Structures are given as structure tokens and as C-alpha cells.
Image 1 (tube, rainbow, N blue to C red):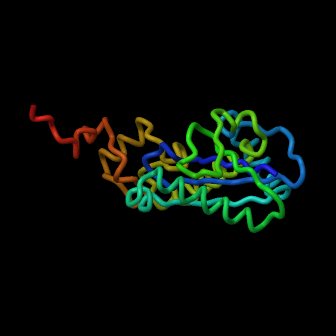
Image 2 (image 1 turned 90 degrees about the vertical axis):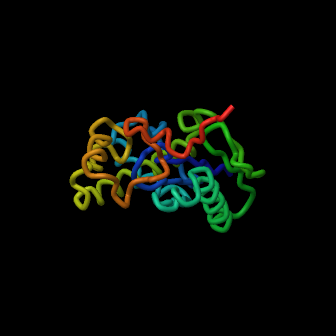
Length: 193
């Protein structure tokens, strides 16, 4: 059995990190890397994947990301997925993460572009992205000035302009420095020699 793992929300400046793991029970067709599918197609595949797999989705909030760092949050999420899905399935499970690192987890394999080539990872990428996008759409009415439903927390020009005007909300990652605000220099000690 193969469990595919992928994340959504590693790079945004607001909102949570979402990590999903999928083990298929039955086949689901028309899968691909979530970024290559339309929002409509992702939403259509989301319930089909859930109905035909063992899956687990983990969220890490902006506050957790600020406290622990994005790599620690990713590693914790992956370990939670592995432990949860091990308990749901009998037999030997291989775990495969999209990307170029296994985060120091011995039993985790990794492969670049796995989200476009391995159906379990494609499915995990869709679950992670749809879950995160839905969250950003849900909170958007409470943070109208930021338009979270439009950019989903990514650092678009309009989003950065909103931060300049209104400051950061409690959904923003304070630890993510913005060049547009001159923050990349904060906390960097000058070389004295």
C-alpha cells in the first residue's frame, strides 16, 4: 500500500498550512497536481477522493507556524498522518511525500513532482489545497479588508498593499518577512568585519 502526502500553504503570508495523506481503497480517475486543475475540478474530485480512500488532513495555524517554524510544522503534520493512517490500515504501508526532502523521517520517501505523477500524491495535493482554500473562503468575511477569498493568503500585490494599510491580522504569519515592507533586513545582524 502506498500513502501519498502533500501540502498546501507552505508559502503564503497568511492562513494555515494544510497537509494531507491518502491511501486509495478504490481508483479515482482524472487526478493531477492540484495546481494544474481548475477550482471546479478540484471541488468535484474532493468528495470522490474522500469516499474512495483512507485519508487524514492536518492543519497548522499561522500562530503555530510563527512559534515552531514551517519545517517543524510540516514534520509534525507528516508524522501525525503516518501514525493515523497506520492505525486505519492492515499491512505494510509505504509513505511518499511530494518534494525534495523527507524532513529527517526515516520511513518517509520523497520524490520531486510526485503530485503530478503518483495518483496518491495527486489526491493528497487536492485534499490539502481544497481544505485550505475552503478555510480561507470561510474566514474572508471576518477579514474583508484583506480579500482572503481572492488570493488565499499568498503575497499578491493587493494583499501586500492591504498589509501596508491595515497591518497584519491574527491570521498573518508574523515570522514571514516581506521585502515590500523592508522587513527582510529585520533581525539580520550586520557583519562588523
